[in-house]
Image 1: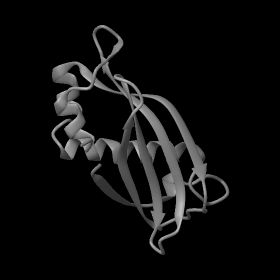
Image 2 (image 1 turned 180 degrees about the vertical axis):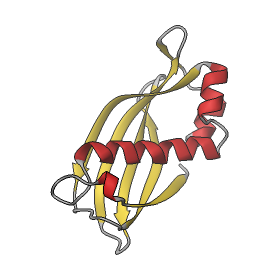
Image 3 (image 1 turned 90 degrees about the vertical axis):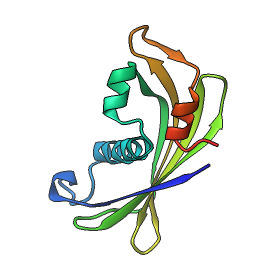
Length: 134
């Protein structure tokens, strides 16, 4: 599977009262990385709206490994995983600090949803290409 990297700088707006990234913000930043991944491969918001099909997260497991503080540069590494069945695939993401330490790990189950019918559909070849699935 293809690997995608997304870099960002931690900003004050990402922080909680303890001075490190707020737990809910981790999910937002991981999502930004996934949108960057699919947008670079031709399946951004415009495409989701035009086709009326798009990604939906079905399950997630987030592990916090190392503290991330203000103004650190972080790289989110995203990689598609296995198809669990004909409708659901896995994706693995990591937040990596500049020193190479893994700060957080997110494992998700994702499906492709028909936004009109409000149900999962089998992934199209274009969608699989957008998420780097080979």
